[in-house]
Length: 480
Image (cartoon, rainbow, N blue to C red):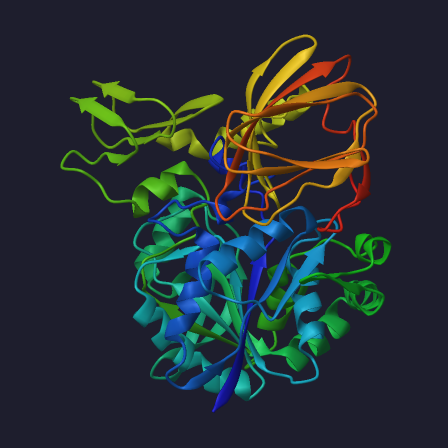
């Protein structure tokens, strides 16, 4: 039986799906199509690949800042990771895959490389396509999956396929850049072109040999970063300086495009399985369920004479009257209104936010932490009010603030509070005061979530006003 090692690449920021997707909580962690997040759906997809293969627990490569999100989402969906490899900086998919291949190099399995943020509706069809490609990957070929196009899409790269290798596999002749409309229409009429899915099958040793040959600068930097790394809780931290020295490049540009010019080295398996990269709001509308008038609605939505809209309400009612082909997305701190044809330009809004030094492109109003989350309720010149939710058994770091004092009021649950040399319990409707400069810690010793209202007061209320003394999550930076 073939040993198949899934590699899930989870380094994306999803800025084109703002304001739902933000850099601290990007689209792979969002439940955009059902109850599971895109990451959870990607992991669950692996459960149907076991008919002819031994499928290992996945290796996840993710941004260091997202490590606890990855671990928690997999755990809550009953999926374990073989390894969670942390990228200190983003260097695109070629270095990320090199990290994963090094992590499993001793066993040299066949890798199935998948982005964490894609959707596939017909999972049995996907499993059948994987089965079709596996023998070629075992034989040392590089296999990719070409999405059977149903429209002349100009937002995807294309694959040009050649002669049939067998009943389910074609020779891969070339990768083609994103076309203009007329060119895309000619591709569709030709029938020999497929959308580039970014999903690959190949042996770990084959990838390492290819990256060494074609991009030795990437291979050298990533080998050094991985070799100098160390385990940290459930994660593996690579050496930050060595990894940052790696050039940034994609799997396609670094290896697949030059390799496709070598006859017989690359194969493509056509895949018709309801695939989408959900790269922008228009793509989400396309794969969502529609009502009788073509609206894709989520949350508290009402419509009158409106059609073919994507309407997403998260916090308040969204009402659409007499409009069509719009994207309307409402969150607690932002509202987006865009024409579907301009959905790709949402990224320009996040660029404006960054240029103005605003944090709405980075964080939601609710900010997730490994111990739970906090949500801003009110903010003034010298005060801030937050709602903290601490998971059962979790604890904030032992810390101190130079510029702010804090008042904690327990709304529900039980809190264990450390305040300098005192440790005591607080229950519902009880409160305490943490003076400026006091070492303190908040813990939840109970079996239910702890809800706290925190009132901060002082001359500076930024999240970086923190000195951390102890932390069960091994966080060094001041992030709460």
